[in-house]
Image 1 (tube, rainbow, N blue to C red):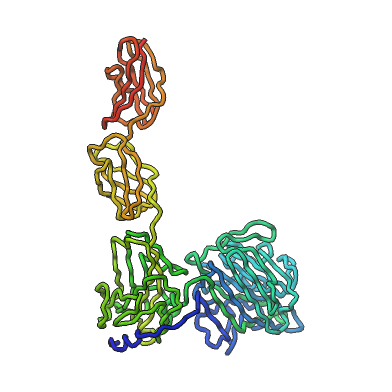
Image 2 (tube, rainbow, N blue to C red):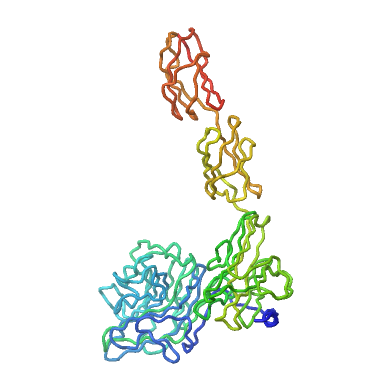
Length: 577
């Protein structure tokens, strides 16, 4: 692509884009990209048939891409249930939210398990809203026109009402061959289910995807393990019995909105033509998950990475832009290749935006030089102040229109991290040249360490520990200090003066040969003991106790002096008799 065409595509105009969160609408299913069918599910020209009324059908239909649920969602679908008047409308269908290992190929057992349940192959890690049209006393059903919410937490789900967290028999008959509307609204902590035009929920359940809920037997059930801690795969399952007791389940329309999440433009369009969009822009290896947000402490390394799209067999040219602030999609640029989350253009960016790197070679000034993707920009010193920025790119993707695609966007919050904490130091009384380990948290990187004012260099580092070589000439009760570049620090004591808390057998014969036990702390191997200035034989020594044999002495009080190999002393009194 020549630079003139690229510049034209990026010339852009500012538009108001009000679609927040992940959302879609299938007014019908004539264009069904993004839905994966499993088992007996099939598309008609305008609808989705989970079951067609044949015997022993079992099916599922999943929206292929996981959708955000942790901050809330609002979904609605229209359905019709047909059956032979000579038989029963068996068995029914379910709306399912799941994060099973099988992903978009997940399918449970058939018949009364409705395609989601089963003790052996029920869909694990799922929450199910079932429309059950046959009463099964063995499962604990309360009617043949029941809406029930089932979950077994991370375990395989079951059709038995023992795992129901709420159920209702609505006044509206659902298997009457007429269109009905089911709406599910989740606000963290509450799940509301509406049927048709009824103004109030037919069922309202206390439930949270993180903490779970309560089964009908009053026992707690845990929440679900969410994809990237934010999302689940959503869709439908269904099953039939045998003719004439077989129901046809038709989904006519379906819409979904994840509430409270980022604007739709944050997903980008890279790889969208081959399936769901993929993340090629990351910050410190993180695309921000569902919320597209990453925290980076001030003064800490920042790495901005552009990966080569999986659809490309060769390195890709790109433009990566930054925006000074949090882009919310309300001023996105609508381009033929997708929506860009903030105003950006070449050769000159609008106020607030800036071109970071340009590997297309078009005449547009960038902050840093770049090569083709895969590429990364590393700022070892990070940002020296708190701020927020948003990053997004245009990158080559030959499967996309014009051979270009919009990358995912990432919001980065540069924040002051909590202060470091030193929880322990080992050993507390080291010899010069020994390796010393500081254990704690919040050390991060780019810090300085001093021991008694002497700068030392770490030999091993992590956020939870630091290892350095102990220097010579350290005084007693010296401070070892970790200072981060943001000015926050933590200190502890090293080479402490020993403490004697008690003396067992504090008096004895002036002829010597008595056993004396010094109890305390911070006693060090190699320490010496004198009594009245005369060396006492050290029989044994631990960190908390020293056993000595007294030398001969003169009747009366005599000082006991314990001296560590590093010159720290502590004194007590012994009395010769």
